[in-house]
Length: 493
Image (cartoon, rainbow, N blue to C red; front, top):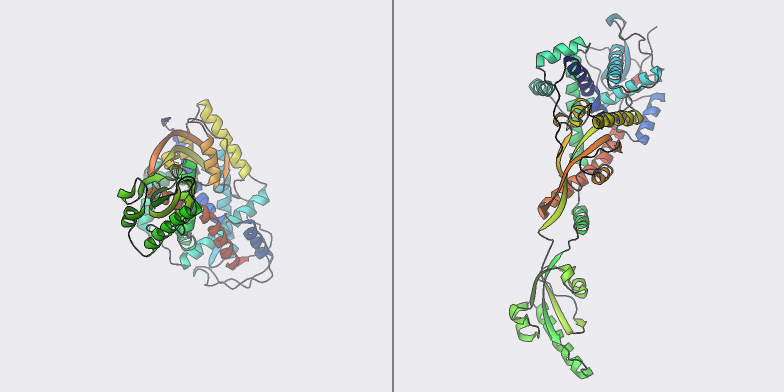
């Protein structure tokens, strides 16, 4: 496994990381939730902006804000041209349910997005387009946050304090140093704290929706496991017992009929509930008759195909529905046991990744370019993978330098896993697009380990849940946005 050592961080680097990390806390996780809208949902958003009549909000605006007048068609967004707006010149830009977006908030968010883009070397769209995109993102956030509060989600101050302290520690800062650094860079700590609280609320309500909406059936689990067993080259194991009535070569029709009648008798005795052991000892002409006719537990590939066809759909203890004729004679079969192999040799991969989530502030093309530049920096030795992941990745693995740990097949979405599986150990991928964003991947080690069938079921359940979650959340967000009250305000004259 490739090891990366952290270089000593200068104060300037720490400053860079704090700003970028703060921007991610304010934007990235919220946008990961809010910007998953499918094209149909985006169309509904646009439709709601031009609607002549909007819905009445479910609750009144926050007490500190005046109640809004009747909704009007959406005017062009005209946030202040200066980096900020004085308190006396502040005004409401949009009302979302019972939440307000003010001109000062919009201006501050724009400033933060621009600062983050400058530090990361990311391009931004034209000024007017950027303003509208940032405003759309803030509306999405308010929709999700108000829903989280409506369903009773809460984040207490003590929990928030612990999270901020942990994040500061991961950036090699104390909580006091973090506040000072944010203040030095013009980031209001209370705003940062409130946005972080909102982020946690959204994460929790999203997880709740996944639990409520995503269901994995037994049939889906069995199908997934069967596919993995097939890929591993293993098959089912069967223990079959038989009564064999031999038919001599060149036997007359009368002899064959007599043998057939004996086999029919054996089958009838089994159907009436008589144990195979006694029937086999009394009638079978097989060498295993003294063992009750049992052939022992064998892989399917070690048994005749005609036997498997007879017993494949049987339950343990059931006799085959009919007498089987082969060149050896007549067979009366009973399934004693059927099971998967006790373990499956499955490949495990240890990989690291850096994830950038495309958003209205960071296009997919910009994310691709940024990760391509990261790849060059790693290959040239200027930066380590771990450093870049800690500073830039928008995944939960960022504090571990992007390390995903040991994972089995089926742990990731197919588009990510296909690229990871094709990488030689130690190699870097090209920037790779998945449903979660754009990734830079490095495989650090591989091995094969025996996996118990019980564990394979859990792998199957997690993989299927991940696959279904994205579609379920997209549909949920589409529904939330369609029911949200969104009122655009005129710019005061």
